[in-house]
Length: 181
Ligand SMILES: [Zn+2]
Image (cartoon, rainbow, N blue to C red; front, side, top):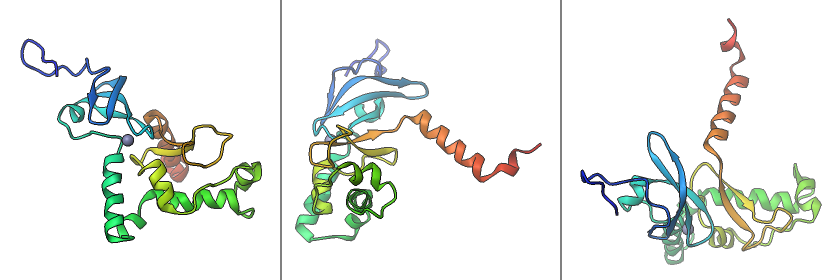
């Protein structure tokens, strides 16, 4: 860790450094807080992390460390209720439906185009991709023409500007009266 002459931690020189499983790639943003774009050793996710949570050790992975602890708990105690509520649980059924159920909305964009869903259980999917790293992440195929298969899936973090835009658009639709003079 580098400190400036007055003893303050410098948050702008983390590129290339390693914190737990995260390797810092490049500066992501520097406004109120400094964020670094990091890649995780598990190769499932890249993630923006606040510099101070890297430096104080509170963020050490993309979320896979916590997932491994949870998986260990499942192995120990069998299926537990917390796991059933994992976002990956509903993603498993939603995507499997898109690939295998011709009645599904959007089936033509998935199963209808030959895309296969190659997981038999929710546990297999979570073992391959890990837990959803945060609310702003979406599970996508690495090769969009490939199958939903181990090794071809990763979490993509949606850009914050896009998230804000879609939120305000939704508000406008829900509340058109509020905008009238
Ligand atoms: Zn990871």
